[in-house]
Length: 203
Image 1 (cartoon, one colour):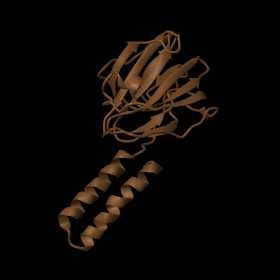
Image 2 (cartoon, rainbow, N blue to C red):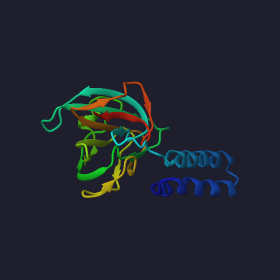
Image 3 (cartoon, rainbow, N blue to C red):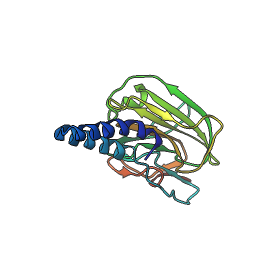
Image 4 (cartoon, rainbow, N blue to C red):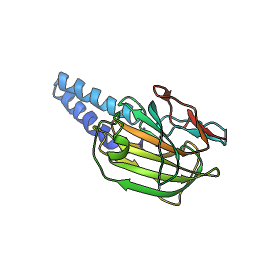
């Protein structure tokens, strides 16, 4: 389990024990179920990324919502958007090995993460990654339920493909922007696993 999860799981579990001691069976069951869900939500399974140096892996678990042509800071490219439901793993991972050159926090709205405008308008962390092949950008995007995007890295950090870089709490979205010259391999509706599923490949 992710370290951040302990402070959310402990209160309902402790209160569940107290309720059980007082004989409040229904409250005890509800609190234990809530605590079990929190433990499940903050799970952090081990992932082994592919060895392919040209591969771009998914930064999160979920379902591909969009693959669209979209420029970024004047450069042509494509954006892949992935929706993370409540039952998905919410640990964010680096899509490639490289150096983080910028980590920009952008305050914003809290639209439902499955909506297209969430990519531009919602609260988010924008991470600029310089790889051996070129620059890519990926985003941690808060949703209607997720009100907190957490990044554990800072500019200058070196990261490996699939390395854990942060967490988004309770339903969210992750975007990957790739420059022209990278072949996108996924389509809307496809389910992907963070740090494992190859979403694109450099030519």
